[in-house]
Image (tube, rainbow, N blue to C red):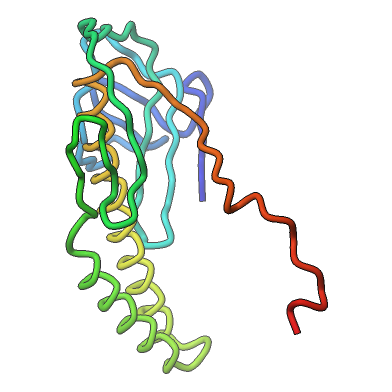
Length: 180
């Protein structure tokens, strides 16, 4: 469920750094991920409900973004097989840890869900548990990638991209008879 509201005519109000629901005198209890810049007023508020039952509020503000200091560092990035990334500096970035446990937890929750009778309240609770584990995995992946990409961009503002062509993948397609 997504509700995008323009603040001129919306069900949400923004006053004194707080978000208010229409006809409500109390501000919504929000855990802010970051503070708004001084003097910034949101032009749009987006409210989302995830399948895991988590609400999120997104505020659109118009501000001037500070440019990062210029650097002449260049870096080449290769997607790895044994590691997540291999950098031209020789650094290898390992795959994130801890996902085996999360996938085991997901499998256990999905197995419990499959044993619940359709339409029952216990199935609803089990479905919510599966959605929460999925959300946990998604959050961990996004967090890891955001931290990694932010670090790479801050350290090296110049990026080059090249297209690799592999001859072994350019073989002629096999005919239908060769699959038998």
